[in-house]
Length: 308
Image (tube, rainbow, N blue to C red):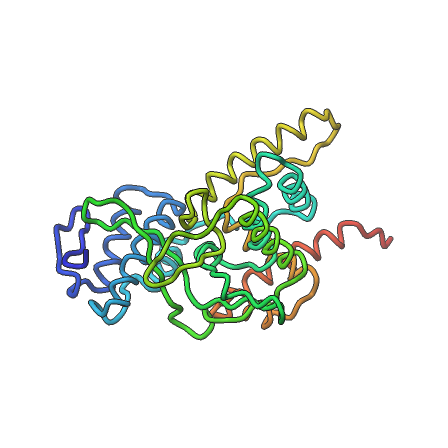
């Protein structure tokens, strides 16, 4: 898997010889010559970064040459990146109510409720084990990430467990009541259906969120489920023939993390606390979100004022 690093139009290089300048040249070629959009570059970078992170874990290379490269690319090309949209309070409530009450989709409620109530990344959420949840102290321990990657040897995709590279990534998240109820609901559902985890990834097992075969979940499956949920939820709303119906916009799993962050900012939670809960190692990442949300909040509040 790690013997070579394939770069389209650049031939083949040994993994140990790949430098940041190679990655930068590769990314620039994709943008300048192939005219790839920033959303596509996000996807390419995420896959490449995860694969090379495994190489770091296995001591094939000392550092990941893709670290910070996407951020530098966006800055260099002055990408006009559309801000990730958080769900509004009304949209969030519609989403949650639909999941709770839908006979077809209510089994998806726990995993999405946990994302909305913790702000955990997708890989952190699907990587949770029951031993990571302290029901007595109401705490969730985030100490690893489950990743799904292309093995690159023609044998398809596989799972791996990555441990945090920084202290910020390894953290403890307070478990609010709705999140605790979601975990308990998932445990009861598995007990009633006889479902249990049959997967083992890098020595990790007993994962909380599994599919009907007992295998672990991953981002692709969850986003596919979200698309169906959004479609059917909106269809249900439209059948009620309301004058100005609230509909769910297209969104992904990451939007739930952004929604969680937005709710914290709206309620005035200290920005350092937000950084700690989200596991941001770079304070500017948290501050950018905080600034955007508070700016929008101020504009909405002042828009309702009639001072003169």
